[in-house]
Each structure stands twice: as C-alpha cells, then as structure tokens.
Image (cartoon, rainbow, N blue to C red; front, side, top):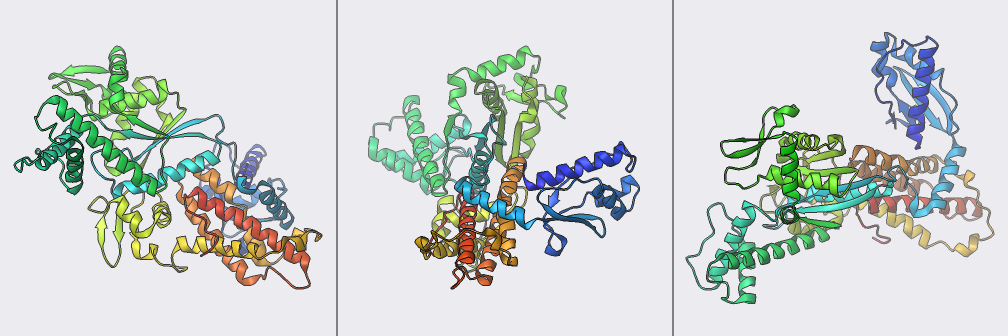
Length: 551
C-alpha cells in the first residue's frame, strides 16, 4: 500500500468511527478520499480536502468537519504531524526518520523500486494503433502508439501480465480498394499509362513505390487481370505496408507481441461462431435483406447492421467477433483499447454486443485519443494531414516525440510544439529531465568509491531542505505507478518526472556533494544521488525515453 493509500484509508476509518460515535451523521455518500501534494510546502507534504467536499451534506462548517475527522485518525508511523488548516484541509507532514527508511528502500531495491504485485494474476490485453495496412502511419496515429506502449510498461511494473496487440484490418472493402490502387500503379510500371486507381481508391507516392517494387520483382507476370493476380498484388502490397508500419513503430520504440489478422476470424470460423451465438440468443433479426444486431434490447437507441444485404459483414460485425475471441477464446481478464475520437460512438454498441454474448462489458475499457496539432515556426498542420510518423521522429527524435505525446491526458487536445521539442535548454522538459539524470551520473562517475569503504553510512545527516525535498519526491514513484495503473493515464509519469528533475537541479545548486573534511555527509549525499539516479532512470524508462549519462 502506498503512502497516499495509507492516508486515504486512515481518513476512511476515522469517518466510520465518527459516524458510529454520533459525531457525524450516518448514511452520507462519501466520495473517494484522495491525498494530494499541496502547492505550498508550508501546508505539509500531503493534504486531504474531503471536509470541503462534504461540509454541506454533513451540515457542518468545513473546518469543524475536518477537526471531527482528524480527532478519530490514528497516528501514522510515517507522519510527524497532522493538523487542520483553513478553510478545512487536513494536512500531513511526513517524519524525517521515515523518509530515511524509504531512501534505504530505494537503494536496496534498485531498478525494481516502485514495482508492485498490484496486478498479479490479471491477464490484460492492450490493443492500440490498429490502422488499416493501406498506407504509412501519420501523426494522428502516433499519440495512441506512444500512450499505449507507455501504459503497457506501467502495467507490467504494477504486476499485470500484458499482451500488446495490433489488429490488422486486412479484409474488407478498404483492402480491396488498396489492392486495386496498387494494381493500377503496377500496370503503369508495366507501361499501361491509362491505368488509374478506382473511385475512392488510394493515391500517393507510396502507392506508386509499392507498384514499382512489385513490377521489379514480378515483371509483367501479373499484367493479365484476374482474381489470382489481384490477390497476389493484395498480398504483396499489404505485406510491404505492414513492414513499413512495423519499422515506423520501432522508430517510436513501440513493439507488439501479437499482430492479429482480421482474415483469421473467417478462416478459423470465429466469425461464423459469433453470428450463430448471437442468433441463438435472439439478438439477430433480418430486415430488408440485411442482418441486424438488436441493440435496442440492451438499452441502445437503435439497432445496428452486422451483415449487409450483399452478404458482406460490417466493420461492427468483425469487431464483435474479434473482441469475443479476446475474452472467450484467449481468456483475457481485461481488454483495453485505444481508439481515435472518430470511434467514440462505437463503444456502447460494442459493449452491448459483449453483454449479449455473456461477457461482462466492464472488462472492456476503451480510451479515446483527441486531436493533435503540430506547431512550429516552419509549419502548422493538424494530425493526419501530410505529416507521417516517420517524418516526425526523423525531425525531432523518438525521445521528444514520446514525451510530448505523453504530456497531456488522452482526452485533451494536444498542441505539439516542434520548436520547443528541439530546443536544448531547460525550457524543453525532455532535455530538462534527461539533463538532471546526466548531472547525477556525472557526480557519481567522479566518486572514488574506495575512499568511502570505511566511512559509516549515516543517511540521517541529510537534513538540508533541498535533501529532504528531493527524498520526498523520490518516494512518490510507487504512488505514481499505482495511479497510472488504476486510472490508465500515463501522463502522470511526465508530470512527476518533471517535478523530480526540478528537485534534482535544486539539490545540485544547494548542496555540494563532495565536501572536504566531512566524509560522512559526503557519503550520505552520494547515496542520495544514487537513489535519484535510480528513480529518474525508472521514470524515463517507463516513458520509453532514453536515460543519457552524458549531455
């Protein structure tokens, strides 16, 4: 249990005791109790505002309510003092002795510090990006890719068993149009200048590049149009695009455990089994030659087509089969999808379909990414225009890309400042954090460890305000990892890493590490630096960002 959890639980117990003693009215619906870091350090290390939230319902003054609650709080082993501050905050200051113990924990656990068994035994499937293999990935896809991979790292650190999956939409009308478009490019490479992409088909230099590559390999062997040749074109074209997608994702430090083919839903009979089960349960009906999922029976506003009158399945139908396979056949305990904002309306009907198939829909969580705007003195484009993921990472590097895509919550519009991302100064948060790590590494590299072999380690010498503040920031890593695991919001990593970097830079400016004539304090500060290096590096690795030792 983290320090925040301990504080919250202690407050909850105190509230129940106050209710049982008649000091508080019973039957009130208390919201979640959260221990936050106050903006002003004079208000302690943690603060709880539950009295402010509940004063009106309890028909009490907030400060009075806070004092009643505090009177029933047991002493925490890690708290030096706790008090009520106007207009009704319950504040806590942690004990310096306890902080030293936590510093020792960081040093003993090393790179494993912050990890937990919170998710042990829970099998999570994380599916993200999943763009049709019909073209290169654009900036609009990058945000979900970075957030998904960082979330996977955080969940693994919290003990979850995580499978990262890319769903290949390699069947259906869009793939057919893509194949026809590449076939036209191939025919032009064969000398047929009249060949053109079909209406609604794909255009762009990458289509010509693929068509030319197939011509170089196959010559004119596929020039005579027939189903077999078109299928060959489709196979080769999608294979090349998938290869490009893999390479672009790897440049962003994103790698998947599973690449799941939509075609396999049909070849393995999973799609047919899903349709049969929905029909057996009475959730399918035929109207005007099409097959409909009776969503209204499950609270939806309208029914949805699953099989068109042409006999072709809809995207919704294959998605039902795909997600049912995740739960029923592959036995994932939880499924987390990261989708673009244009899929918002698809969530409730998919959950309804899972309910119809006997799956607890709460096991499916869908995160929606909002739009990204690229800004710089050279360009200003909305995500998804002409800027590809590869162009972006080649311009500013994967570290800056990952940090800025992680810097805001997914449900917030993101203004990506390219000029700031390439600035090598403290104004650039990526540079600021990495420089803090490099600074600490530089100190540690200069230390002659043999000099301190016989020096007693007395961490209680770390009494300077900058030292204490740094330790308080270091120990928050387990709380942050827990918060990311519970909320599925990895942007908390960037915020905490920036705050820790600020404390490192302040400590560096306030406290000389190697002191002549005081080996004991020097040794204690060296070990504090080691702890800072451990935690800073952990934050960077959880974000998928490199931790340079020199800058």
